[in-house]
Image (tube, rainbow, N blue to C red; front, top):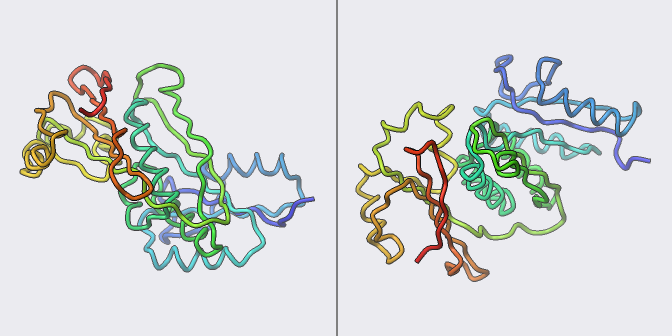
Length: 263
């Protein structure tokens, strides 16, 4: 017997239906229907299934009010969120590492950095967990491009997780992207310019901070020949771990990828 009487499915508003930021969903929203049918088959006809769709323009205040509304119900809440889109596996992996870190640390102020199809859904999920004195634990990350060994832009990743009665963990990584060309060169080259977000910080070669940051410590003195992500990994004392890594993305060679340790 189920411990709950209702399932609430939260989906992005993929087609910008209606005028409000938070609306009941309908048959046009695939982010709802694919999960509804699975839930119905798994849990039976006795379960009430309710769906809501969110625009990314939903304000923190709207999301907090809605989180309180659904937190008072004896319901299982499912969040339908696509994570990295339209990018080959290694770039998507970097974006998903950041997403996992931000979600598990409940870092509301950093959610806007994520390369996902619904930052509003992620924020609602984190707020709802906090109201229940829970945090989100990521259990699995799928990345079809990496798993198949095929470098393709037709790639969508997903994170699977659940809420647990535990405190959020401090953030464990910081991602910084250094691009070898000016910003205008990259614009329009990937779907929705998704190559250009999904990092804590990003610097283009015309930005003075690009040079200053590279000279500020020994690992950044190289002249980058390829677009380079540095992933700094922190230990329990929030100090940088020596296992931090560098990933190089060669955009000029159709995004052929190379990896190397930070020296």
